[in-house]
Length: 306
Image (cartoon, helix red, strand yellow):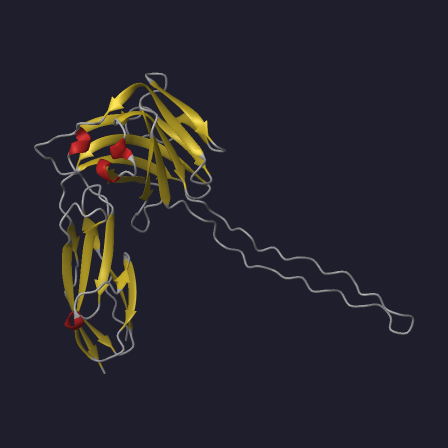
């Protein structure tokens, strides 16, 4: 009999209030023309939209195909984040709504090959057989690229994973990266004049917000079960929930604490079979991807019966 542990993952939560209340708005749904203009980048497009909004009366609708195609926001007055960049807890946060790619791609078969010629006594040849491929789901946009230009004409960039819980397609996704972790940003004058946005797959997404916020929210994990019983060879399904403000989180699992805590599996949802009977301590560790917050650990006592 299969016993499964099922726990949901919610990586993005509210930002905890702090004494250092950094809050610098870069874009918050205001109309274009009010100190902000937009232009297409590569083969992508960007346009103002009221179809979906988060803050204000507008959002920006962006089409992308690769990390080099999307849209660019340009600011008539540079946005100075130099002071904010001194605190490691200050994040550049974005909110996007990605439209799911539906349908299938591929699945067409090739036609028959040409007939081979036959002599007067052998008759006509046989038609060649064409191959075919099974239809597959289209690739989804899972990462967002930010390309930041500063007043000193330097470029810096960040790649943000759009980690979301199952069933969250079509909702706003908030994710942030420490200013100090943006590649090349510390070598600039930190006065932002433009931000480019693109995805890693053909997609349409809406931009609702870009801002600098202070996030000291601790990582809090939750395992609804602390013990479970399995039959030898059963497959267990494990996942975990967490809240950590806007941080990007990594989840790791160790299946037997007796041989030391190691990263034996990575990810939100884990499937595992215990090959030996006995009692095992499974350890889940949730970490801030940039090491700014203390990790969270939780354990599950697993009894594997013969």
